[in-house]
Length: 99
Picture 1: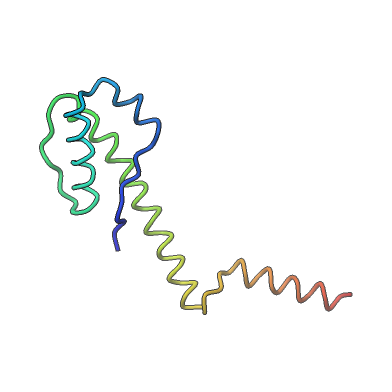
Picture 2: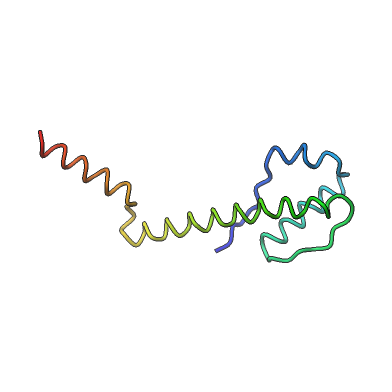
């Protein structure tokens, strides 16, 4: 399952300050297209130079999202309890038994 969004980070504002509104819009549209379909559209001007930088952000966020989905899926298979929850519950039970 792919992410249904693209994060636009605040620090991108400074990085894109040299772009016209048109270039910025095409860059964002290109990132959305890439994130959703894996396609790289043709860009122009400075957007062409910045796309690989922002593409790496999109790739990294996508990988983190997929990792989180896999963790949630595994927790669901275990009845919705993560390893941490099970460990905390075991420690609490052991503490009560010692008292």
